[in-house]
Length: 240
Image (cartoon, rainbow, N blue to C red; front, side, top):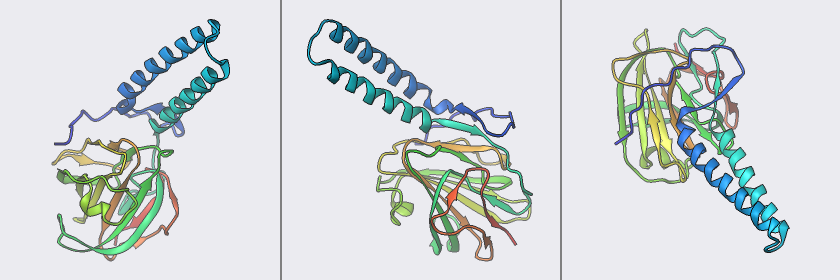
């Protein structure tokens, strides 16, 4: 079952401000403690002249780089969408567009939809944002495999969480968080019956993964394949 957590309070709307996401607290503390122990042991061994000093400096350097990568991964930018929110669908994640195609969606809609997929690499922010305004009408979590997130079969076979939002105009939009080969934990904050807004956080996926959007066939798609996206900033589509 997916782990439910209280939605983080992120009300400060100053653009470009960066903070660390609450989902990274335990990981960063544990990794920092291990790093401190290894660095302390290395300095002791260097002082005792046990083994070549370059080896210990190399180990320390590698661990510090890994820790910096984790800090980058758990960034949580505070953003505010600058455009008109009416009938807008905004990128739910940082990453690159890897799929824009018409597909048969069989979990909720059971009809044809336009799927737009955003792949998140290890260097991307992994916080996920609500893509459109409305009311949460469906939230579900399904266990599955851990194929590489950019593969087409990941949408149907990987572990995933589904959030369906009904806009004020009665249009249902689905956002699907998908685990990847390394991602083993999907956190979804949305709950059925909640009102939701662009700029709200939808959840978080730890390590490489992807988010799919399922849109009506008449939606005007405003992105192209390979395009970089910025969560809560890039306009993905306009609804009719």
